[in-house]
Structure formats: C-alpha cells, structure tokens
Amino acid sequence: MTVTRREALAQRLHDVHERIEAARIAAGRTEDHDQVQLVVVTKTFPASDVALLAELGVTDVGENRDQEGRAKRADVSSDDLRWHMIGRLQRNKVSSVARWADVVESIDRHELIAPLAGAVERFDRNPVQVLLQVSVDPVPDPGRGGADPDDVESLAEAVSRHEALHLAGVMAVAPHPDTGMDPRAAFDRLQEISARVRTSWPHAREMSAGMSSDLEAGVAAGATQVRIGGAILGERPPVQ
Ligand SMILES: *Cc1c(COP(=O)(O)O)cnc(C)c1O
Image (cartoon, protein in one colour):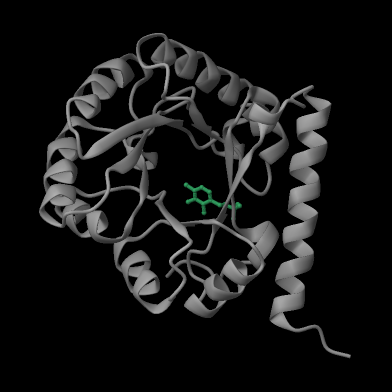
C-alpha cells in the first residue's frame, strides 16, 4: 500500500511534536506557559502541502521569500493559519510582505521598520507581530542576516513606536555547522539577549530558535517557537 502525502505529513508532524515534547521535558519546561509553538517551514513546497498541514492542525507556517509566500497565501483558503516571514528582507519587498505576513521574524535593520509599519497601515491590516533577528554567529557574516546584539534594543525601541507593529520577541539561526560552534551556545546567547529586551518590553517574550537539526538545542535554551521544514516536509529541492 502506498503512503499518501497526507499520511506522510501526519506521521512526521507527530514525530516532530514528540521531539519537541521530549526536549521540553528534558529541559524541565513542564508548565503550561512553557508550550513551544511549532512553525512549519513550507518554503519550496506547494500550496497543497500547506492546505494538508492546516487540515492536520498546523496553525503556523513559515516562508522565506516574499513572492512565494504571497502566492501561497492567496492559494490556500484556510483563514486559520498564521503566516510567518522568516527570510532575509529587502527594503523594496517590505511593503509586499505586509500584504501576506502576520508575523515578520527577520527584522534586522532600522531601514525596514517604518516602511513595514506604513504598509501595514495602508493595507489596513491587523498589527504585524515583529521578531528581531539577531546574529549569534561567532564572526558576523553579513550574508546571513541578523542584527548585531548591541543594536537590538535600539531596534526594539524603533518597532515599539509604531502602532501597526507589535514587538513580539527575537529570532536567530544557529551558526553554520562549519563554524564548529555549538547551536546550544548560540541559542543561550539569544536567550540572554531576549532577557535584556524583556526588561524594557516584558510582553516581547517570543524566542524563535531551532530548526530540524537543532530543535532540541533551541528548546533547551528556552525557545518559545521552533521553525521546522525538512523534518516534516522532507528534503527540499536544491536552491537554484
Ligand atoms: C529553511 C529555514 C528553516 C527550516 O529549516 P529546516 O532545516 O528545513 O528545518 C528555519 N528557519 C529559517 C530562517 C529557514 O530559512
């Protein structure tokens, strides 16, 4: 008997939920407020997969390209999904992203903030949740995105000046495995940055950390959400 796409997704979704739960318990994070939100990263996969995931109970999906996210949101009829923009943002794409994203996780420079707020207002959308992407690379690599940790408070201040934006927290991608840096050390650093932000903005409690290969490290460090692609959808076709 062949396994349908729906069955394969259901199985892998189940496995990932179990990994998250095991990591949470291992970290002693067993209170109700310790729940970890799963964001399923659907980039490169078709809108039909997003529709199946929604049927299977997924509430949050992540896309890393404006065009793809926008097209998929238009294709998927579910109104119950929250769409996360998790990819590098170009200044000239910000206003397009404001049409489809409910959460923007990759704000890492000042020049993106006012244009995003302006576009959200123009389109008369609900306030967009903003996560500040922070670089936790041992040696900063501009190509990977992420703000210098020293700039995070000034970015938070700028975001919180706009009613169209809601400062929700911080996000990071672990350093490339080639650097030899332990993802846990990187995510612990993100947790310190998150704590610093929360002293001034206590509601900004989201910490987005952990992907298919390092979700356990993210949860151990205190992630409130993980972003999982491959472990649920399967291997992505190579990027052109
Ligand atoms: C692709 C991507 C993910 C998901 O990565 P997987 O290894 O497929 O789980 C998470 N976060 C960001 C920013 C991504 O671009």
